[in-house]
Image: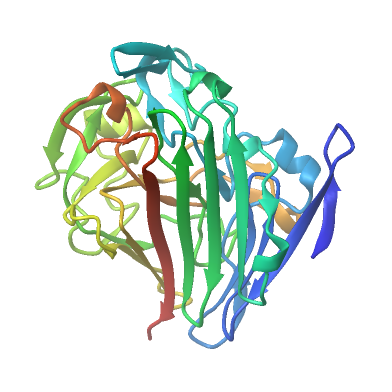
Length: 344
């Protein structure tokens, strides 16, 4: 545990280091953010594969959500509209008319670390999200546990509420398996275990249609270079400025299952994503704008990718989507594992 900086109100912020026999990561209380994630390549050479910043001051100014825990509602809600029990709630509109990642959100919150939970390889963070913050109903109490093993970074989410509400949490890590700061992710090979995706309009809000990936640039059922079709003439790619879409995972039973796999050939690094969630947002870093990150590295367009496990965007306004309602007295649980390996 070390000091990571000070908030504008004078509150100190700490950063914690976790390690296993092969993996090492650092996590800060501010936003519950993963600041570093160090993973070996096929020769045993270790590199940090997640984008971020060296200082708290940089995180206070940034808008890319690097490494952050996201809530109360990850991804977008059209027009900031949530209807529950015949009552309409207006939640913070921070992306035009729409809500992105919960408005002021968990990424800007100071999480509390349970000191008794800390081991070399695990820690638990907690947050109280009060009724009415960003317009969402209900007092919500959240716990998130990070655990490292020899091959895995596991994230377990747990939440309860005293009123019916909506919740959709995720982790907003940006990855580059060639190493953070490498100029491109377009040669990474991606597999997504999904036959469909949620089509979006020009504001990146789902239309309600679950489009089949077959015969489109969205077909990653077999390994494909991320850059192979990213600039094809396609209305959905145009709407997302590249890939910024939710894939409807084939596994919909709530059990932990393989959702995605990424392979980077020069290092041999492989990252698998397993989740209990029904969807995964693949974002190809289209809006990275050359900001200066860790170790003075420049993060240019498409130099990092996100695989955010989640329920679908705008689910409160699409009754046919899996529900994101958490009822008073019920428990929200979700698990995602990022699993690392190498191949020759």
